[in-house]
Image (spheres, rainbow, N blue to C red):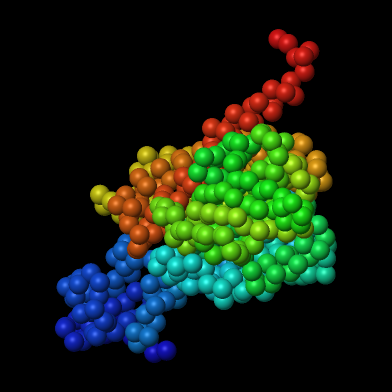
Length: 507
C-alpha cells in the first residue's frame, strides 16, 4: 500500500474530492460523504485532516472494518494500527488468570481454551448482533453451528455424555466445571442477554434434568436430538399463578385409565426459548398439594401445545413464551425421575441453572467495565479526559471491586462443584449458590448504574459508542428475577445457614 504525507491529504478537502486520515490509514470519502448518517457537513469539516481523535470520540473501532474498501493509502510516519489482542489487556476486563496473574483454579489448558474459544466465537459476533437488533430468533443454521463446535454439549457440564468427545481441544474426560465456565463466559459476549438466552438458555436449564434423571432410552434419544442441533428444548416451571413458590404449581398431569399416558393441562409463563422449543421439560402436579405432588415430564410439541411470544424489554430473540397445554397426551415413558418426586429434580437443577447465570453476569460486568475504561480514557470533557475526574475513577473502582469479589467467590463455589457429586452439591450448595446469585445481581445493578453515568446519553442509545452498555442496562434486571428473585435467594440462603448453627453457638 502506498504511503502519502499529511500535506498530500490536505489537498483533498473539497466536495467531490475528500480524503481523511484515521488511525494511520487514508480514506477516500468523496462518494461516501453525502451518505454519512450524520450529514455531509460533518465530513467536510474534517476533509483533508487527520481525524483520528474525533473519530474515536464518535465511533467504535469496528466501524472502520466496514469501510476498508475506501482505504487508498497509509499515512506516512503514522504508527500502524495496533492489532486488537485476543484477550483484552484492559484492567479488570478479564479474569486475573488471563492477565498474567497466578490462579489455583485455572491451568494452562483453561487459558489456551479461553483464547481458542474467543477467536472461534468472534466470527459470530456480527451475525448474532444483527439478529438481536432485528428482534429475530437465533436461526436453526446458527444453532447447528454451535452444536458442531461443542458449544451445546458444554452446557451440560462434566459427565458421562462427554466421553469420546473433544470440546475446544479438551478431551471430554478432562473437561471440568472451569472449562464449562469458559463456554458460558464466551457465550455471554456474543450479543445481548436476551439473544444468548434464546440461543442456548433453554438447553442450559432444560436438558440437565433429562441428562441426570430421565430413563436411559429417553435420555439417549433426547440428548442425541438436542446436542446435534436437530431439536430444541426448554424448561417450563413458572406459571401465571406461581413464580418462586414452585411447590404451588397448578399444571396437572393425570394418568389415563390404561396407565400408558399422562394428560397434561395447564399454563406456563416466561418460558425462555419456549416459542421455538420442540420439547418442554415441565413441572406438573401428579399428586396432592405441595412439593410432594410434583413430577417432571418431558412434553413434546404436539397436539394441544400452543405457545405465544411474550413481549418483554429483554429481547424478542429470547423466544420468551406463554405456553398452554390442553389435553396433551404424553407417554408415561417421558416421566423424568420418579412420580411425585419431581421437586428434588427441580432443586438439583436450580444450582446449575443459577451457577450458569452467575457466570454470565460476571462476564457481562467485565465487558461493561472494559467499555467504561476505554471510554473514560478517550472521551474528553471540559478539555480533559473523562478519567481525570475523581468521581469517574470512583465509579470504576466500585465496578471493578464488586466484579472481582463476585468472581473470586464464584471460583470458590465452582471448585466445590468440581469435587462434589450432584447429590452433595444439592445438599451443600443450595444456600451458598443462592446467596452468590443475590450478590451477583446486586453487583450488576451497581455496574449498570455507574456505567450509565459514565456513558451519559450514549448509555441509553441502542447504537453507536454505548450500545453494549445500553444492552446491559436494559437486560441486567432480568437476572434479579429469573431463576429465583433476589429477595427469595437472600432469604433462602440465610434460612439454610440458620439451620446449620449449632445449639451450642452462644456469645
